Length: 103
Image 1 (cartoon, rainbow, N blue to C red):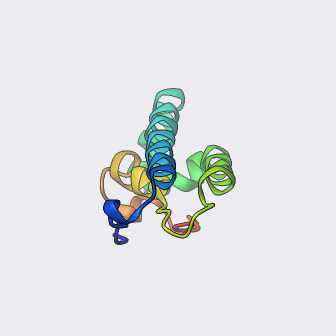
Image 2 (cartoon, helix red, strand yellow):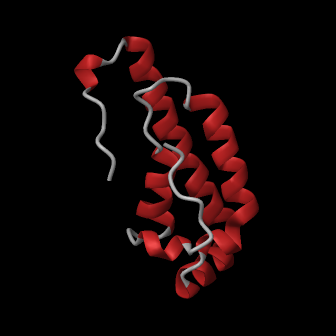
């Protein structure tokens, strides 16, 4: 996993942006799982979550890029949540077509 920035080195504004990015990522992935449980299950089983949830993942990535990739210290929390929650900790379950981390 990518190295997280040293919290003490971030300004209050940067910390706030990191917290909002983490929250956005958790909520967005949870919404995908709730809205399309069958697609999530099939995507995990076939090792191709991205193929089953491409529109949702692409839209979330674009929103994340625009709202949060505005500071050099930002981490791709959306990717981390997709791996941790949607792919149950196994990045390969996202599939070969998954474009990877934004940063």
